Image 1 (cartoon, rainbow, N blue to C red):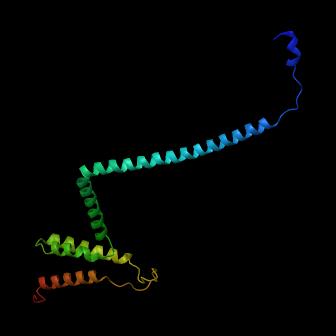
Image 2: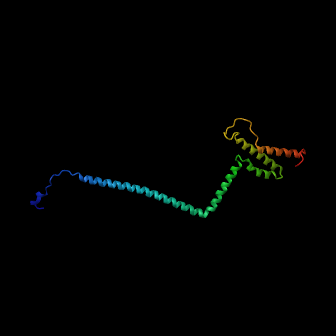
Image 3: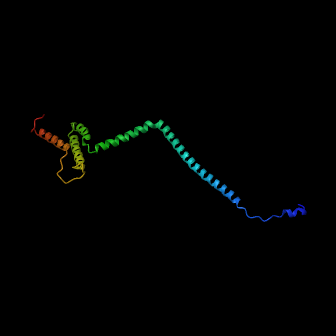
Length: 172
């Protein structure tokens, strides 16, 4: 620039202007709101990805089950039947063992009859001893305990059998 115009280039001292700070502050607030909104979208997006992975895993299990489902079901039913059989045999229903005991006692072998009668009587006594006298309160008072009915029947059958073998009772 030529020398004659240099005086025009001098700057006049100005008061500091504060309004550009307000513009920057407004921009920062908008940017922060956008960041928070995007973070919320990321949280939703991650949740959607995990839900999608859950659906895909369910589909994979369904495909596997389609091909080997019958075998899995058979194993589950076998385990379930075994557990229920064991539970039924060791429950307060001693009569569930009665058909098997009667069938085994009907076999002509004396040692099988002895084992069946003793084991069934032991099972009946064991199950009856676990039952409280007063079922409503669940407490035992130390009163006289009743003999279990299956044990009475087994004792009666054994007694009749012994009397019949000794010839004291005529067969019915």
